[in-house]
Amino acid sequence: MKNFKSMLGATAIAMTLAVVSLPAKAADIVDTAVSAGQFKTLVAAVTAAGLVDTLKGKGPFTVFAPTDAAFAKLPAGTVESLLKPENKSKLVAILTYHVVPGKVMSGDIAGKKLSVATVQGGTASVDAMSGVMINDANVVSADIVATNGVIHVIDKVILPPQE
Image (cartoon, rainbow, N blue to C red; front, side, top):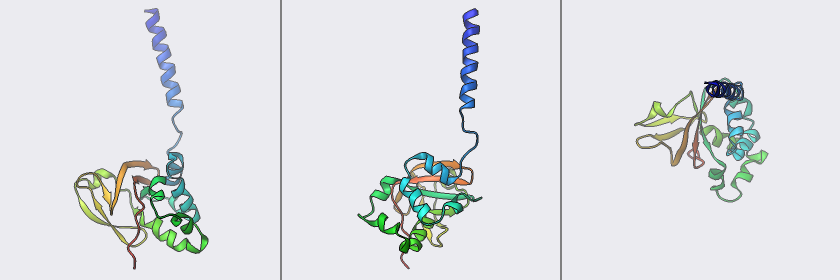
């Protein structure tokens, strides 16, 4: 019985420490992307485009976030070119094409094919019949919840249609 009480006490202490070590508050989309570690290029692009304050705003937003590996698939020199000040408007257009107003969870679109309006002003095709795709990018991780929306990780940078 004495060992049981000691074990119970140790378990209670461990559980208390586990609760104390949880984050005090959830993070917004930008801070969630930064802490994930796989969106360094996206975060640099959002910063260069002047979109940090917007994506830290009230929202809600649904962000289809390309990983660093997705950006690496672009032709050599593309990212460096887009990050130049003279290409800011093109960078803003590409980044805002990855954002849909509102908070759309994967369960909201499961089993559907639809066209969605992006913040950029264009539309993107979503196919959630088996897995989820946006245009020709696969959603590789869905429903990463932030305080002002949700992030869906994609394996390719999607580009708005040429006008």
